Image 1 (tube, rainbow, N blue to C red):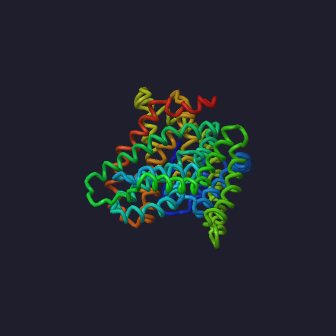
Image 2: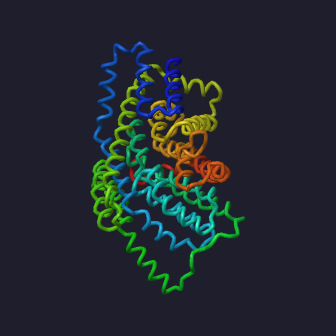
Image 3: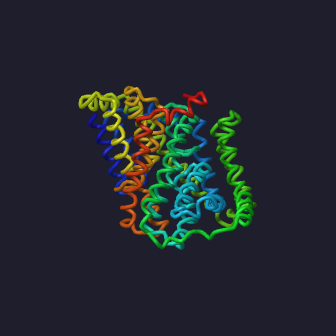
Length: 435
C-alpha cells in the first residue's frame, strides 16, 4: 500500500508542478512497476495495457473530440444561442439562462466541456457585458455551465468511465441526463438570485407578436442543422442503428459540411486547427489510458480497493456516511486534477468499493460525473474556473464569491440528490432496459 501511495503522490506532485499529464501518468506507472518488484513482469503488464487500450470502443474518443472541435469552430454555437434567447431573453438574468441552456445543447452536440466553454463563452459573454451583467458572476456562470458537456450525452468522460469500469456506455450516457437537467435549472435560478441586486441590467428589445413570430421562425430555421446533430447521434445510438463508435464517426461526417457550407465557420485555418487539436488531445488521452490500465492491474494485485474499504468501514459502517466519504474523496481528486485524469485514476479504485456498498455502478457513473464537474470549479486547481477567467476576461478574485454560491446552491444539491436518490440516475437506463 505504501508503494501505491508513493506512486499516487508522485503523480499528483508532477501534475501540480506542470508536468504534461501523459508523462506524469506514465512516469508514475513506471515508478510503481520498478518499486514493487514487478519489473520482471513488465512485459506482461505492457501487453495487458496495450490489449485493454486497443478496444474498438475507444475509437469513439478521437472522433467525438474531432466532432466537438469542428462544431466549436464551425459556428454552430451562435445559432443555438440566438434561438434560446427568443424564449428567456426578456427576463432579468435571462441571458444567463440562455447561456446555461446553450451550454447544455452544445454539450449534447460536442460532448466536450472545454469546447462548450470556448464556443458559448466567446459568444455569450460579450453580449452579457454589453447588457450590464457583472463580469465576475457571468464568468463564474460559464465556468460551471460549460461542465454540462461532461453530463449531457454524448460525454467523453462517460465513455472512459464505462470502459474502465466495465459498464454499458449507453447506460452511463442516460444516467447523467436527469442530473444534468437538475443542474441546468439550479444554475439558472442561482444566477437570477445573484443578479437581484443589480439594477442596471438591460433586457432584450421587446417585439410585437407578429415580429416575434417571424423572428422565431427565422432563428429556428437557422438552428435546425445544429439541433439535428444530437438527434442523429443519440437517436442512432439508442435506436440500435449505430454503436457509440459509429455515431462518433457520423458526427464528424455531419459536422464538416454543416460547418463549411451552412454556418461557414470552417473556412481558412479552422479545419486544420481542429485536426491538429483533436490529434494531440486524443493521443494524450490514449497514453493516459494505457498507463491507467497498467496501474489498475497493480492496484488489484496490491489489494488497494479492499484496504481502502477496510479503512472506511473501520470508522463507520453507516452506508450514508460512507457515501459522504466517497464523495469527499472524489471532490478532492477533482480539485487537484483535470476531469479526464481523475476519472481514469479513481474508477479502478472506487468501483469495487461502490459495489461493496451496494450502489449500482450505473448510478455511480452519474455520481462520478457530478463530482468531477464540481471539482473542476473548486480551487486550488479548478481548471474550468481559470479558463472561464481567461475567456471572460474577469479576475479570478471576482469569480470566487459567485462560484461559491453556484457550488452551494447548484452543484452540492445536485450531488446530494444524485447520490441519495438512485432513481434520478437509474430511471432512464431502466426505461431503456439497460439497468
